[in-house]
Each structure stands twice: as structure tokens, then as C-alpha cells.
Length: 320
Length: 94
Ligand code: SF4
Ligand code: SF4
Image 1: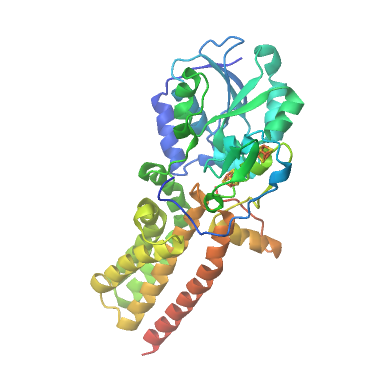
Image 2: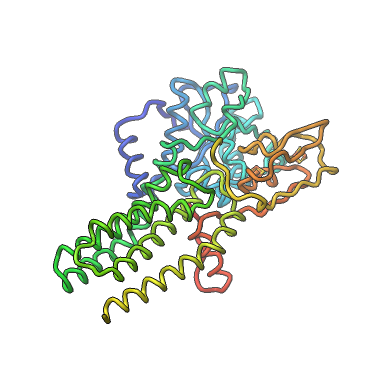
């Protein structure tokens, strides 16, 4: 049985930072199985988590100094919430790990403590039927685990309600930004070259900065400002941020571009920002799939029209 | 979750209340407080805050809750549509 510390070391913190920026994120894992935190006995609580190193680190740090069993499921290095959606943090995997680890001989009680956000993947009654262990969804945040255990295992309303604070939004944005840049950084480089060759380096730089700024607006600024931007639709929120950025750029940073080309650029840049703002729905814990689908059926045609208009404006600018 | 509401009247959540056995699992797993338990029967109090995560349906021991759960980001939905047309493989949101 591996024994593990509840204190995080510098290497753990550096690893988390890299994973948040999507550096080596896919391999940021711990081996699945049963771990001893401190020196747990047969009455110690059993806490189930994902084998995403960051989830595992948060849980063991939250239990600071306490004795517990940690049952780590194979989620292929993905956090509890996302893995539950994919079904890897799921009924079958939990049953398999309970049996494989011989948990019934390790503890005398028959309770598994799971994070509430793991519930989309796990059917508690099926786990009970197959293993004899009763699943209890303890809290949303691992940081509430200690209070949950100390208060006689009661989930207070605060432990049971989701939050989506500025910080909780911001820590999701680096991955969004990196994913977007994988596609749009090459495009920015092309713009740099095209601008440079047609009207000098300053225009090339201006175009590239305009595009990268639009990406940052959609993946970072709009998510950060989410509750303060008007409307409920993410694409509308993104459009507002996008227009402010691209409009400002067109007024003060577009150099030698003519009015038609500028207007086309404003349209295209706003679409970029609006699209990435809309895509952030996948990271928020309150947007329904039906809602996103409904929003997309109106937003995507609008975006396509704006892009088509931008292309026409650029064509016209090039010809005249 | 104050200040965070999304589009109204779209959630696909359905509850067949007469066949509910009142175990309370749906109340336990829903992070948005969509359900309450009254007189040993579950009731939907606010369908519009449902994020369609599927936790309640998955954990209802008698299967009286249904919801269309799945990926909820634009790129994931586009990938799903393309997959239906066999153009590419679907990927999740996160
Ligand atoms: S699908 Fe999720 S958010 Fe909607 S009612 Fe069920 S548990 Fe709550
Ligand atoms: S989980 Fe199902 S049976 Fe249990 S209270 Fe909810 S609806 Fe009723």
C-alpha cells in the first residue's frame, strides 16, 4: 500500500501551473489505486478521486494531517467533473477499483465519499449492488472535506452550492487560450507577413496584434467579466468585448488601412472573440447543452454572415 | 450560483413524479438545487437552472428522471454534428 504525504512540494505546485497552461497536461497523472494518507485504520474514511494529479493534490492537501484512504480512479489524467461527463469517472471504473484494491478487507465500514461533481458518471445504487459499498456525495469542493468530516458528515448548503468566482473562471482560461492559439497563432503569422509585404512591417504587426487581442478577449477577458457583461448569451457578451477591442484598434491602431478594410477587420475580429466566448460555455458549470445548442443556431449564422461581409469588404478594398 | 443564469425554457429535464420513491438522491447530487423533497416525493422547483449534467438521472434508483446530458461547448457540439455526418470523430469539451 503506497503511503503519501498531505503536504505539497514545490514540484507539485510547478506541475499544477504547467498543467493549467496545457503544458504536458495529458500526462499529468498519478497511478490509479488505493493510497494511505497518514496512517489510516479500518475505520478511516475512504475518499474517491480522479487520477488527474491536480485533483489528487487538492484532495490530499485539503486533508492536511488527517488519516484517510484515497481511492484513485483511472480517468486518464482528466479532472473529476470532465471525467464524469465522459464516463471515465464512472460506475464501472469505481466498481473495478473497489474490487481490485480489496477495499472490503481494508476497512470495516461500507461508505465511499465522492465529490458531488463526480455524480454525472456514477450510479450510486449500481455501485452498492455490485460492491456493498454505499456512495455518499460529500461536497462539491475538496477543500470542504475536512469540515464535512469534522461536523459529523453533514453537507451544509454552502458545501452543496456551486460557485464560479473570478478566480475559478480565470484558472480555466489558460487552457482555452492555448487551444485557440494552436489554430490562430499561425494565422496571425500569415497576417504579419501579408501586412508586411503589402504595406510595411508596422501594418503587419498591427494586424497580428489585432487578431491575437481578439483571441485573448474571447478566451480570457470575456470569461473574466462574465457576470458583468450584459445579456445571458455568451456570443452577445463576446460581441460586446470584441467590438470594444476591434473598434479601438480600428480607430487608433489600424495605420494605413482604408475604411472598408477596417470595417471588414472589425467584423472578422468580433466574430473571433464572440466564437471563443461562446465556446467557454463548455467550461462553465451552469450552461445546459440545450441552451448552448439554441444559442448556436442563431449565433453561427450571424457569425458566418459577418465573416462573409468582411470578405466582401476586403475584396472591395483590394480592388478600389 | 447567484448572477449565473442561462437561457430559459430549454432544459430537457423531466420527472415522472408519481413513480418517485422519495430516496432523495436527486436532491443530494444536483449542484443547482433543482429538486426538493416534499412528502416523500421529489419535485422540480427551478428547471431553468438545470445545466443538464445528468447526475440526477444517473443516480435515480428507479429511473424516473430523464435529461439529455452531454457536451455543452460550441466546438464539441460542432464536432458532434460533423460526426453525425461522418466527417470527423467527436471530441469532448474538456
Ligand atoms: S441534470 Fe444536473 S443540473 Fe440538471 S437537475 Fe439533474 S443534477 Fe441538477
Ligand atoms: S432520485 Fe428518483 S426516486 Fe429518488 S427522490 Fe429523486 S426522483 Fe425520487
